[in-house]
Length: 121
Image (cartoon, rainbow, N blue to C red; front, side):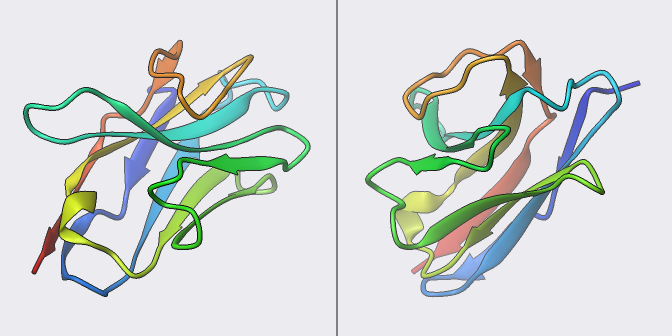
């Protein structure tokens, strides 16, 4: 069984919104924190947001005030609500999980397969 399955990407115009989802399998302990990481073509991975098991969140400066990370524990699903999207948000977005998370972290033990977000100007 795949540990994490992310979905919800697509193409939108600048200023639009998308919501990404990430379904976590039973292999991901409930106590693990989760994160969203993105990678644009030709660029390094960039941490976007993290959420701890107690619900504490943290965001990269580039998305603060526009993106919201949340988790539905009953559904074992992680979300990323993205508003006011900009062309520079264009990237492959991955959900990730591990025992420790921080926004600048780019290596995790568990990864989703990625979902593409494209924002046109």
